[in-house]
Length: 371
Image 1: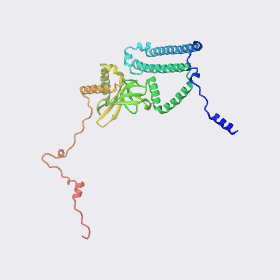
Image 2 (image 1 turned 180 degrees about the vertical axis):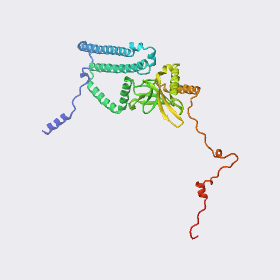
Image 3 (image 1 turned 30 degrees about the horizontal axis):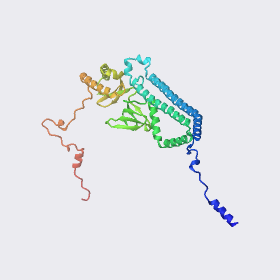
Image 4 (image 1 turned 90 degrees about the horizontal axis):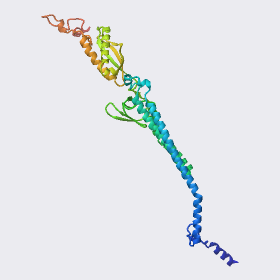
């Protein structure tokens, strides 16, 4: 009984016989013509049963790629036509002729700015279209190859959330740049004030705007940080000139002289294209005892107000000199002590007046009682 139990334990502890490599059907090589024929039949059967799936997957992938490329080409062509229609001037703009050139920066007719904005919008739309279509086609191809997209999509979602939290400023800058371009808030060559910097726009990007400051420095401003924008190159500008004349001058004559000088300036080149409308004399700005200041304003093309103001001051100065207009009344001559002295006499003494401060100081101190 004991011996039988011991033999049973030894039998249970002995390792199981391992299978030899020859038992594996994949690693077994045919050793006879019959086995070779059987292996050939099995391979042919496997190919005959799998080629349909391969062909189906290949055709599906080819169809996905072709449809994606065709759809991308069609959408990009539609976007190009849309951009070309945006750039094309209307009949009313074409009939403006020279006035259209004068209003090139007025915000009404602006072909160059419209072309820049349309090109930027078209580039963004083409990039978004290509990314969406090709990305979707790549996922469909992977699905056709039998790749499980669930882990990939889950990982992409988690990565997108992480990138969104980490790059939220980048997303803000990008969206702000897109809306700035679409709304035509400013363009290359415009003089703008962004609150943090003022200068001429050198480059408008989807993330950063580049400005050239007044001292030649270059500012790189993130679009997401811009809270307000003052564009001095859109619409029109106002040239203001304060004209100072003498207090006793005839203001009606001065106003007519200013208008004549301004009209003559507006007829000369290049001021005939820079001055829009009639120069106006608004009236008296301030009054002093020896002079009067008149305010003169003129509507000019954007960014040309200083040029027109300087030219108008120069012409008014020359016109005033020719007409003999005084800029300030002559001050009265100062009366000196020497002028009060008669010829051959002496200057009056400060002690001659008993009520003067000098006489009061020179008086002796009266004696006190009991001294």
